[in-house]
Length: 396
Image 1 (cartoon, one colour):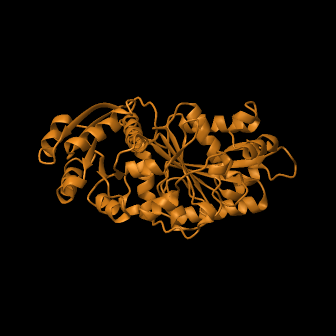
Image 2 (cartoon, one colour; image 1 turned 90 degrees about the vertical axis):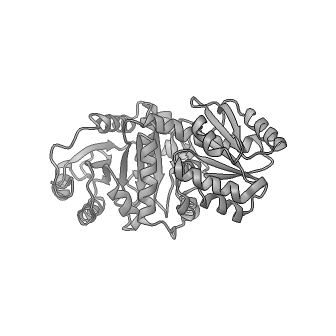
Image 3 (cartoon, one colour; image 1 turned 180 degrees about the horizontal axis):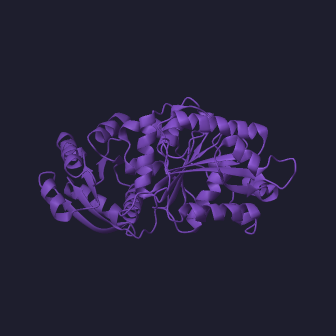
C-alpha cells in the first residue's frame, strides 16, 4: 500500500499522552504531513468531549499510562462512534496485548516508540478506506462472480483483464481470488501479496473496513487484489458468513468487486455465487467444456441465487469447423450466449508470462477488444432492472 500523498488528509485526535510521550507522538504524526491535516489532543478524562468537539477521522489512544482506563475508553468510543477508527498505541506489543486492544474495538495496535513509517502505514489504510467510502457514498458497488466450470477455460485471464479495463476507465475495482487450490491472480498481475484470504480467515472475528483494506495488495494501476492463500491452502477455514461479510465490505468501498470462483461446490463458491449481482460463466465450445458449463448451470438452479444478470461467455473461440457452433452451444445449455472471446494465444500467453495486461502486449488484440466491449456492455445502464426475472433470477 502506498503511504505518500492522499487527497483525503485526516484530522487526528490523540488521547491520554503524558507530556514527553505527547511530544514524541506529535513529532511522528508531523512526519507524515501528506496524511494528516490537523492534530488535536486531550486526556482520557476529557476524551468523549474532545471527540464531540473535534469530530476526528481517527483517534490515537495512548494505552501505557493507564491501560485499564484507556481500554475502557476505546470500548466506549467504538460503541458510541463505530465509524471512527481507533488506533491503540503501546510499548507492549505482545500478541495478547494486541488481542486485548482489538477486542475492545481498536482497529490496530501500533507499537511505541512511534515510528513514522509504521504510523503512516496505519493512517494510509484509514485514509484509503475513507476515500473509497466517500466515492461510494451515493451508490453500492457491484459484485461480479466469474464461475469457472472447469480449469483451463481462461477465467483468470478474463477476471484480471475485466478488472484492468474497468480501472483504465477510472473505476475503483478490487479482485478477489477464491480459487483456493490454484489461485493465480497475483501471478497474472505480477504481484507479491504480503497478506491473503488466509489472514482474513484467521482473524474473521475482527473483520472491519480498516482490517480488510490492510489485507489488500495494490497494483500499479490502482486496482486492488485480495489474494488466494499461498501454496494452495485448500483447508482454508472460511465460513459462508465470512465470505458474505468480506464481499459486503468490499462492495461498500469499490465500484466493482470481481470474484474468481473455482470449479467446486465448496461453501466459499456457493457464498460467492449467492452474493453476486452478475454471474459470468466462461466456457470453451468443446464437448467437455459445455458439459462442465451445463453442470454449473444445474448447480445454480439448486442455490438461492438471484443475480441481476447471468452471462455465458464463449472463450477461445475461432472460426474453425472443428469448434462446436454457437447455435449448438445455445441449444445444449438452454441459455443465450452473451459474448464470444476470440482465441488469441500469442497475446494471452504473452500477458500471462510477463504478468501484464493484454493491452500492454497488444492494444489492438481482438481478445482485448472483445473484453473492452464486454466491460462497456456490462457497465451500460448499470442500475436498470432486468426486463424479465424468473424464480432463480436468470434461468428463463
